[in-house]
Length: 117
Image 1: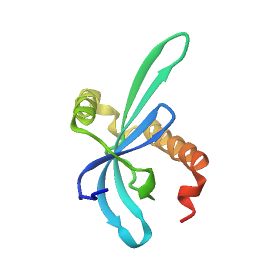
Image 2: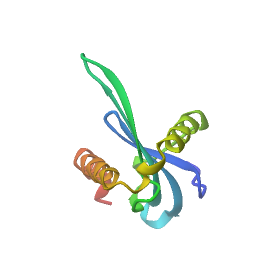
Image 3: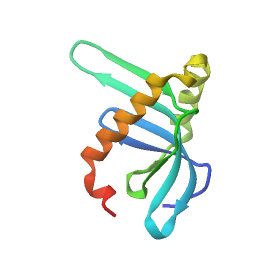
């Protein structure tokens, strides 16, 4: 994969995607410094379908294994950025930080071998 700074990538766990900007790629260790942008959760069950967006632009950065990253395409990212613009005051919410922490924990539990490099 071609690693270019400021590209948008996503991590995926179940029906949730974490979109973030690549800040730095550490080739020797196969790690990426990712600045989270948004968490996009889709729920599909028998009763209903729905989606939720969480603005993470004011949150903490992540270091993650490059094997978990997927390049986000423009047609995926642009609607999400539009949704974030409409959320406005949600950027500083501690609820969003909790959502990010839960996502990272679930990802770590689902993909432990990726974190043992």
